[in-house]
Image (cartoon, rainbow over all chains, first blue to last red; front, top):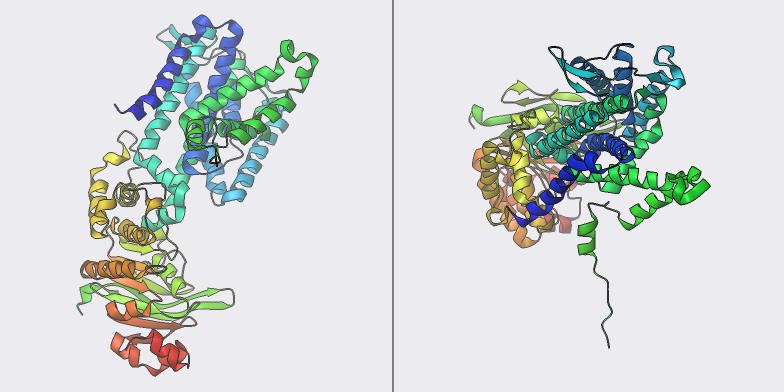
Length: 330
Length: 260
């Protein structure tokens, strides 16, 4: 194995090992926080497929996270535990259908217009759930009983148990990461990277780029749906705010923080974002000023972006490229 | 001229942009084994014609046929897969990838399999073979592992041709492949075009008259979107309309631009 591969693989293995043992070393609060982080990591990974690989900056990605979360809460029976076997595929099917429809229309635009159109669709989705009575309006909706996985009367997975839910989320994160890693090295991923680099050239050599972009958009929507499903199950509660435009902005920020263009950047960005947010929300550290956490968080993010324009994963190459110009003596 | 050598036929192509007619009832046939040059001043409609033939722009009127099949309504990617390759006036390559990866990606257009996410793209044998062959044909054999963006200008243009070749085209639409090239680079590119002639029908849009008159088998002269003359280089050189319309009335300019 080359040295380069080891450098890339070691942190990944270390992070995996750390996440695997975390529930046994971390306190309840931190384990819960880690679950949230991993869900956001899946969400960020799904957007990375669009922004990092395909070069499509969507400002409405929270729509798919939210649609999946709402589908989960609305489809699950009120009094019984739903089975994951049908609830997850159903939520993902709804989300993928929404992504196909929104993608089919918004991919007819480019650049800034694409950003605006995706934002507009996400806001439409927001107001649909906000204004619809059956979805609970602005109060949201509860998922009373957590889904389970039962085979022949034996409960294999009960998502109501925190430890089970931790490992299900961890497994989902690993699966999504693995799937996207496979996509990137496969022909599909290479074609998407080509579209990002020069769509005109891709068409000129014979790639119908629109179906490729739509497939990427739908897959990204579906994977955001995985995160949305887990989110709804975790809190047992959804409300329209999870579709709001600042959620779409937050997940973009995670990518920017971590470094656009790599999978580990997306996960790392989600992690750093949650850590920064918790840090500035801490009342033990900041007292009553913690209520104004958005202000220092915003400043911290501006600082990060200014100092690390390529994100955290871009830092090593940034430092290597940096040579202070020392004037010659004499 | 054998009939099956006629690959691409454009009949009565017009393309209007609002009130401007950029291409006005142009007809031409591209034949395997021939370089068909299109010359004309800036704004004569040469690039628009190339865009119509490549499928990047739909014609306002007229038909495009490939091997007798009407492809007027085919979008560009479908035409490319059917054998119409093109290069652009401005070099369009993937600058951050290696020369080989540029060509491999182009070759992948014939073996797309987007649903195969098990096998790595770089292990796709057919694309790899096509890419290696294209690199060799384009005279870039020693450069396969170079990052495309670090190539010299002439080599970038060669790479662009290599990317076309990687798609195994029958027609090459080349929009000013010699632009901005030094004498040595021009020679190399001309040698390459001559070598590609046997297997391809080549459309060459070019301002370098020396080069055009050296390698073209047929020349079409366009002015304001219309064809004012078409024929073999010998005839074009003598054509009085071409002398006045394209080169202006200034004899000095004529003498300097059209080599005797």
